[in-house]
Image (cartoon, rainbow over all chains, first blue to last red):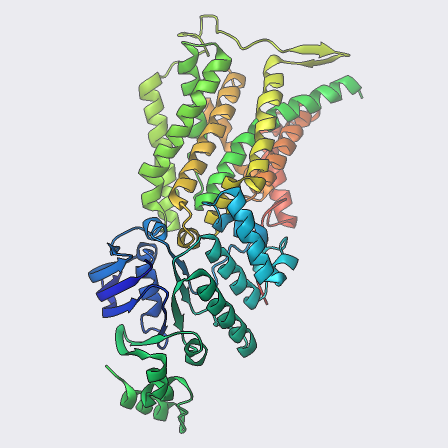
Length: 261
Length: 304
């Protein structure tokens, strides 16, 4: 079993900033879902809440429920959540920049036996030959795409059942984004992962997920299959080229008109 | 120039420098793990020295030192859990003030527990004969080394090198370096960051205990005393010279400062009395003018 259920989740930062205002979502075992939405919609907050990392950001769950593999995880610390099989790749490509590629992988594999660590590291180097070529270089000197591959490799070494990835396409060229999505899809298929993909690049996300949640200002404003999302005029206009002519004031009027909450 | 005297000075400098290296390496380890400048490091030495003294009342000195190490480790973990962890992420000035407060508290506690009179290792009173460690003093070809210097070279120097090696190659070392970069990213990968950090504090307290126990003997009276706190200030120039965030840097800088002090004592002290105490700080000022990151400080990685 590798499923995650979020019910009516409310999250507050510093006791006053309500970042999630009753979010519900679920991802069944082996399913891939996407969380879409603009900056400030609450996507990353949801990732932090799911992975037990809210206290690191001075946030806490105010109300609602997070259930991971049948176990309530609202207030579980990050380590307990990780032991339930959920691994989160946070936004901003948080590799260990001063550690070499090999050391980064070794840090992520800390719970594995030497034998298992070697098997998985070999697999990662086969999947990502570029990482093998640069295995003795510090992570901070890798390109954005290579860092993303390294993070995926590190996540694999934690042997996750549920993988949550926050904005993997951020700052990558369309070609690299396509490559990252392909790899994510492969990993998900080969390892039977449940995938929660947080993206602003809807087109990229649609290519690998079955269902989509669109978030806006701390709420879910659309829920449906990837096909339904692509057939929805508002979703498509909002994410795939709802070009607005007429400058900033016109754009603001357009956004007000299109606000879904 | 008397060759034997130079060799003797080098060995004595390395022996003292090894103690500085051990203490500073522990100090830097904690800074790397938590970004906390532990202004109570001298008191860590003091507590370590007193723990060794207490053990030495019941056991031979070498055994006492080995028994004091796990106690010092537990003390370090306790300080981290009870005092440092709740402060992490707070304002830097608040953390600095808190560690200074910790230093004063530990000073007072040591005074209450062990009293104001000077102690001799292995003896309830300084007038009694202390139970010495096996005497390893030797004299060869005009080079004389005290037993304490030999013990320091045997124990402290390999320990400092061992710490550097473990930090570079062991699984724990990799985890510590990972946690020191980002505790949040480490937690996201399921790394038990709080435990890694607590162990760093424990190791730091252990290293300080070794340095404290040896330097207490050197500083007068043959036992721990509050002068050790002043001696502990040497950690700061050593750490700064090494780069402040580099454990290998702290070890090299410790040895360097030990050597410089020894040669200053030999050649300059008669000309400029008191210069030996000032010279580590002068070196730091000079080095920082030309190398702001110290000798081995980590340069920031910035992608452009």
